[in-house]
Structures are given as C-alpha cells and as structure tokens.
Length: 464
Image 1 (tube, one colour):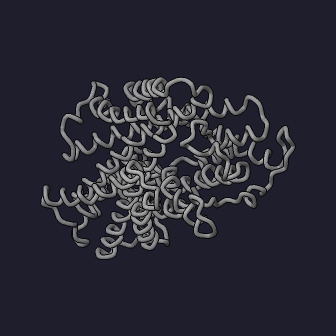
Image 2: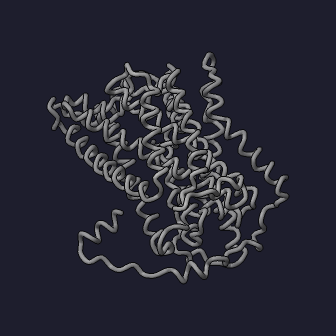
Image 3: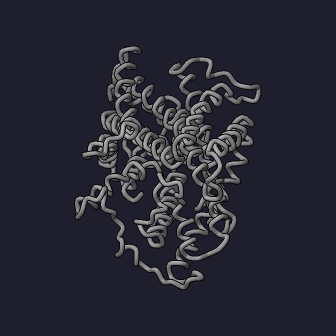
C-alpha cells in the first residue's frame, strides 16, 4: 500500500483545488468538460462509472472470502447471493436507508480499525497471551520485501514491489468521492477545504497506521496472505491468531464483513448516480433518467447491479482469485480516473495562468502544483502500462491476468477518439475556459460555519 501513497496525494492535490473553487454537480466529470473538452468528459465519466460497477462484485468476492473463514465447505454462490440481496435491498430503499446503513457501517469500521491499531501496538510490545515481544523482528526476517517468483537479490525484491503497485492503488480507490459529492454538499466552499484536509489525517491514521501495524505483526511470507488460497485470511485476523487471542478473530472477521458489505453498497450507489449523471448530460441513454416518485433512479440501480452478478465467478474459481482479477480491473480504472483528474487540473492551471487568475485566491490551493499533477499523470499511466508485466515472464503467461490488467487501458483511448469524432468536439482553448458560470450562485450560498461550543465539539469537527 505504501507504494501508491505519493501518487494518491498528488492526484488529490490536483482534484481538490478545482472542486473547492467550482463545487458543481458531476464534480470532476463536468470540470473535464469545461477545461479539457466534452469528449474527455465523456470518457472519464464512463470510465468512472465502469470503475464503480466493477468494484461492487470485487467487494462481494471479498465478502465471500471472509465468510469462508468460518465455513469453506459451502459453495461460494450461497454467500454471493446473500451479499447481493443485502446490497441491492439497501440501494432500492433509497438514499435515506442508504445513509442510515452507511452511518452504522462507517461507525463499525472506525471503531474496528482504531481498536485493531491499539491492539496491534499492545501485541507488538508483548501484551498478548503469548507474551512474545515482536518489535521489528519481521522487518529483519523474512524482511518487508519478498523475492518475486524465486528471482534472487535486489532484482527479485524490486520486482516484488512492482508486482503489488496495482493492489496498492486498489486500496485508495474512492478518495475522490469528496469531489464527486461536492455539488450536493452544504456550504461547499467552506466545508470542502476542511474535508480535503481531513482526508490526509484519515489516510495517515487509518491507512498508514494500519499498514505499519500489520507489517510489524505478520511476516511477509505467511502463506495465509495469499488471496488465491482457499485458506486466505485478513492480515488482522492472522495477527490475532498468531498472538493466541481466542474468539477475537471471529469478531474482527465479522466487522470486516460489514465493511465489505458497506463498500459494495457504496459502489453500487456511486455507479448508479454516475450513470444517471451521464444520462442527464446526454452521454448515456435517456431511460437511465427514470426515477420513482421519491427520486430513486431505479433503472440505473438495477442496471449497475447486474454487474454484481460477475461475483458468481467465485463459484467455479476460488473467491480469492476472482477478487484479484476484479481488483486489478478496478485499480486500472481508478488509475485512469486519476489520470483524467490530473489532466483536467493541468488544463485548469493553464487557463488560470492565461486569464490572469491568482491561484492564491482559491478556497484551497497547494504550492506543489503543477508539479504534483504532472507527477500523478505520468506515474498513473506508467503503472497502468506495466500493471500486467508479470505475464511476460517466461512460463508465466495468463490470459485472464493480461485481459483484466489491460482491457481498460486499451479501450480508454478508443473511447476518447471515438467521442471526438462522434461529437465533433475539440479541446477547449485556455483563453476560452469558463471560470465564471455558476460561481456567483456558489459564492452567494457560502456562509461561515458556527464555532464549536466546547473542546469536545472542536475535536469532533476536526476529526470528522
């Protein structure tokens, strides 16, 4: 996971200045239309929708893998059906039910990861029933870098690092939802800069903190870490089992299961709204605009849910293998979304330069631009290009791995070029970029947030 963090920060640093300045419905997809060209918006929009439609069966496969911890004798189709029913029911009940369940699931996730980090520190210092003080033992033997495919030396360790870049990227898919949701946020020019800064705090505490603890407690060569194995486990569950703590592994596994349900539900919700937005922009068929009396885009929800049926691939193949295939597809789609965000920012930056707009007047800006955007654009494309490099090793060819890593990387430029010809569009010139539409209304709706009444409220506002 550590490998992807610099790119993720670069991408969010590119996304957030634009969306804090113009928090319009559609987020980065609509900004791409303003600052790049409509064909680029079409391509990024469908790429984004595809990303979330594929992520939902990925999480369902992960849920089936987690359930196998208790019973691996039952056919995975049973667990897939159960998860599909839960996810589809939540989404068909509407935004209210979705919001309530997400609040519950999110609370479980925050409490679980916080407790696991604290527990991990205690176990590492010898506070487990075995009283084994682990320290940094596993950083020395077997070490943090595993030799890839038996290739010895620094080359094998470097290739092992390269082999997990797309898996690391998969862990960060979704951090841009803050930008997508900007158009529906209250007082966005005030609240978004705060939300943006809190993203880094959560990444530091939960992602980096959790990864650090796992790296201390679980040796990198533990066979239970292999997702393609029928005995695969969550690394936190492995750590607790190694510590000799009874009953807690099942409790943690149950909490992680709710997290997988939550993620799949969010994926379906986001995908359905994305395709609804595409239809509203005339980039998708009009029938996706059909809603219930309560405003639920049921056609979009049902259509996107059909992609979740891909999780049934876990029936003929192990759930772990299916998860790896889908996570590869999702990671590449996410990386291409980040590429689109970076390109949009570079055009946004150029337009501000040409039109004489000072970046320091924006609600949120960073001094790392435009260099961070260039880094993100180049690095994301590079990772996508080499994402399936392992299949080219002698005797290592896998058609499934090749397709899941490169299908979107190949179709992305085809979509863009096709849209350019179909719509007859051309890139927006820097001097013609629209920095004023919707801005007056957004500024008029802005207001100062009331100050916290006490220290506890101040801490909660800082955290959330």
